[in-house]
Length: 95
Image (cartoon, rainbow, N blue to C red; front, side, top):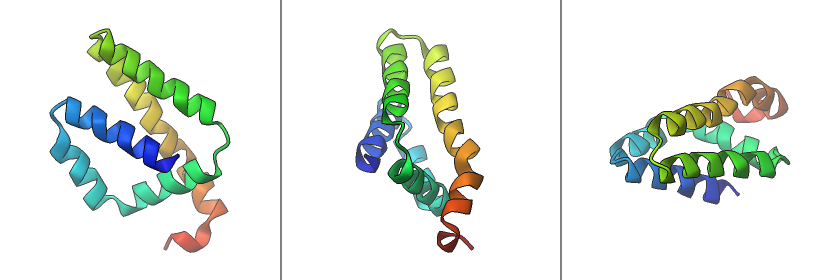
């Protein structure tokens, strides 16, 4: 599932002509990627993640950048929101 999530975000950034930003995020933020991977591995709410991806995709397809941005922020904020929970569940993965 992590690979599919990763590919989705990569395509969004490439389609927005922001490929370098995605590369920078991946290069700089090892902890962010680790949290995403652990969260996706442990997360059983795949339908929620899929629905968020669909909302983002639909907004882009409908040429509604404001809504796409809103959905993307909401989706990415889930990682930030779950950060402490993931760190508590997997303390050996973090300093």
